[in-house]
Length: 242
Image 1 (cartoon, helix red, strand yellow):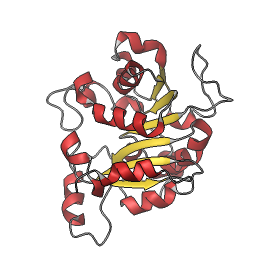
Image 2 (tube, helix red, strand yellow; image 1 turned 90 degrees about the vertical axis):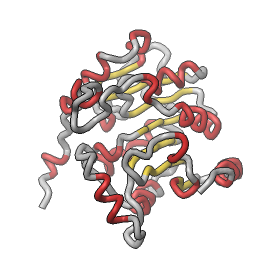
Image 3 (cartoon, helix red, strand yellow; image 1 turned 135 degrees about the vertical axis):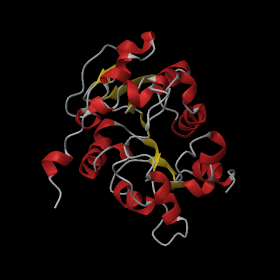
């Protein structure tokens, strides 16, 4: 039986120099720079949600926050890694917070220009966060998301369905990323997200190392749900390969 006290603990010290920037590290980015991010995701999120404000949960060094702000979105970021926050672009310092994403709804800090606790961000942006959290924390965070934002754009690693012939191969690949503590089939995630009363758009990355513009933006990697049907979203998906 799982120890819920241990499951609920998430130590940000793991995400240090060795995880982000050590070229000889066994896990991690081996050099996380501004050029590491996928700007296509920013363009897609803005096209789909037209956000005035955005909170990036699990923002790392704040590169996506900077990209949103460069596009005119009032963006902010939250991350649990002291190292990542300390190594963000200098001009991003006032827009980033060192705190657990799970606590952000209840303990939102105040800064001039940021939506207050009584209001919501237009968009919650999450890139590669859920798979790094214990399952108990994932479930709690999903319940909190509607209190934080009006819509969710999330991208993270998942597994193919149980009866997918690729399942065993992909599970073996993901063993190369031991920091991914919660790996579930994408249909299980869908059931969890459907409990939210908010529009969301999710890209599931099924294969380890396949996180680039050419391979992630496949129709087969995307699942769409919105409480109010938006034909523009379906039209976009139908333009994609795969």
